[in-house]
Length: 265
Image 1 (cartoon, helix red, strand yellow):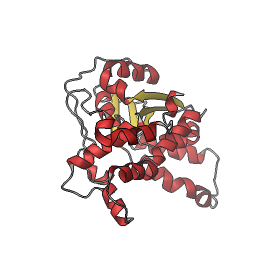
Image 2: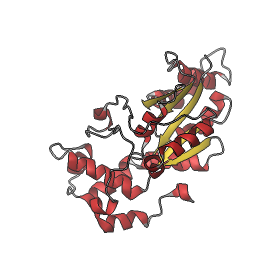
Image 3: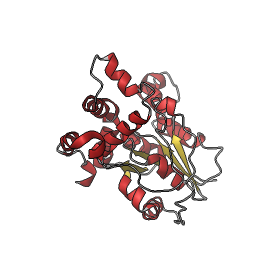
Image 4: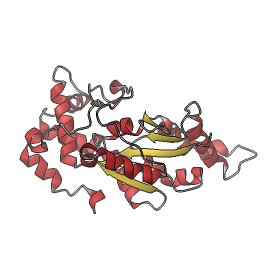
């Protein structure tokens, strides 16, 4: 079976888990949870020159062909014609994937207002009040007071920075085709989002069932140990409160004034 390899990326807490559940309703699509393919590439990529130096039969197509084989080989067991592989930093590898696939890779990127993302994390911390989350542990290790101001600063500078910069690379790149999907679009009009993505990847759309979303298993402990980090409710709806109710007007204004919503420019 000839497969199409598409990538799903974007900011944390911006709807990629629920979008995966939505896309998996399509009979021809397999959308993964967070994939290790990028981790494999990041091991090989910086070492390839030294590895290939000793190869007698070295050819310039050898490396991109190997990456292509890795991407498709990882899903050889999946009986679907479209693979959507999820990792937040795919846009950083646009040029490599263009060489490997022989065409501009298609990358779906989920985005969300930054204060809303921060508020979403804080809500999860509050729900896990019986545990010390990786965020609070980081503050403790650095002898910083545990409060929402420090939590937001840490989240933005340390844990959100890499996917944000990856998104920025994607928006500026001529090597990829990018489809940006806003969290508010996902929760307010899921069918419109599905229609948009299906058109983007070149497949017939389908009638989305918004009352029976199925969550794929994902190890929350692997991603910081916060219960509910990838929770998908069976009904597609927005349930999160306004960001100001969670982190306050000052922090919302602080991050909004930084004009971080580069996808709207």
